Length: 384
Image (cartoon, rainbow, N blue to C red; front, side, top):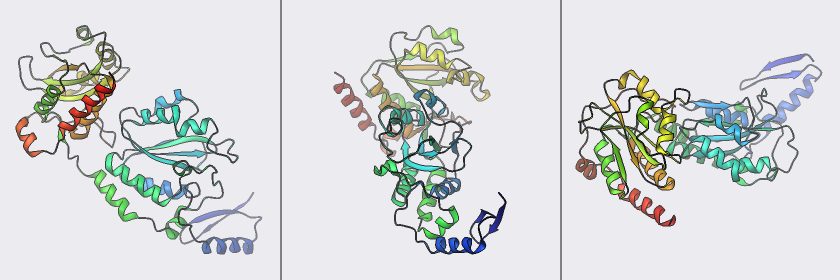
């Protein structure tokens, strides 16, 4: 079919040559006279929502090649960071037509959040056919993942939910699969809060205000002491290779920290990574030493910036629920160099000039460590 390309002030469209110019102009007059409803469906505004994501000052990962069809397919999504995400439907992997149906934020990681959706959430509802009532045969489920995290991510989610009717956020059972509005037309018709979006964008793009974990090493050790649990500090010999992992507990796991020291006798410890393991510490550390796993120990051994230090470990015998509370707390208030930031980057430069005294942090920094300890104690009581 021959196509004519016609360029207007705010969009370019291609139409079949079989359509008369009068019919086409009548269609354009109808479209230009349409008024955007107060809460337009996210499906018909898909191109504009994609435009919004393109305007954000961060990486937007478009997992567009394979639909989410089983839990095993979720392994490809980031397991080291979370943030703002949007689930959408599309007819085929090669199609550019995307129907957004859900917007959310992942506080832990995208992989963990999507797995929960697959177990008993949005993804499971789509798989089981319990959500959408109209005919959507052939539409696959996909996801956008962004590096917007924390409060900026929550603000943008609120902006999108207050502007558009996302079917799976509002419990709407029938999708609007009509023609999608061009992004430019939507922008002209819709009172979209670009100023609020820019503020959230600037907040997300601003320099990380958290204290660097190396500088806060003394306070992190203080916090572990307040937890009233067994904390084993493997401080005598550095972990030089996988052969040094036999000494770590092989029958239980919990919370662990990797830290650097200039020499075994030094009292200066610089925490660089905090994690939680359901496996034993020995098994988890063995994976961290594996180059195929791209583990933390392997990265430390290979990184030139770490060569003048030895790596050591602290193991805390906490239940997984308690351990996650501590890990999330430390990530919220401290910037660990081997924890990827909201842009998916690792911090290259270590801060080892000095460490801030515990008393100074207690008196001058708003770090609610007592609340963390109380949460851990409450979690312990619920597990009894």
